[in-house]
Image (cartoon, rainbow, N blue to C red; front, side, top):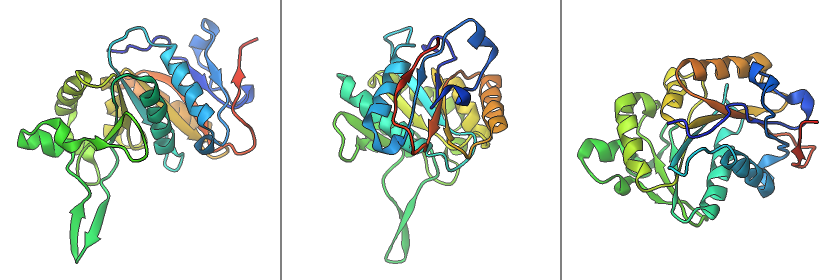
Length: 243
């Protein structure tokens, strides 16, 4: 696995925001400014091509988007990346929501919005039964991982690995939008991915939270390929290079 080279892709607004690591001494990381990311498509384009530049294989890519804590906008970043990937890929890109299932109330009964991948696996159905076209997007498909508050825990590591192996046969890019790293099962997902992107909130996420999350992912067998500084409202995206 691990089809992304150099785990030190760093995405940030300006040099003072860089999360430095020992590997930075030997490698010049790709640096991207992310400003008002939810409203600027170019930010997602930069993110997509920065990750593409690190690919070491044309094999299907599984990429995880995860945050150290809640409230960083990781789902927004994950979906923005997935939409740009879908525009660039000949085959459909798959976005998997690994967060708690959202139920809706109808006539006093709780109904889940759609079948999940876990449901399809459990019933022996094709995984495509749980996959639908994403709203207002071309070439992008969407699925929920499983039911309940902790779908990753419900599915388990072995079934997740088996499921991803099956999905790789049909999708060039698989985006996993997972809960924050303080959920152990969410951090453990990193070992089944080719890389994990940490999404942090400008002026809110603490440095030690970022460092602890990165260390946890790597301790569990994952590879952190970058940090996205999200929700910075004052600066437009721009490329920054090492001088």
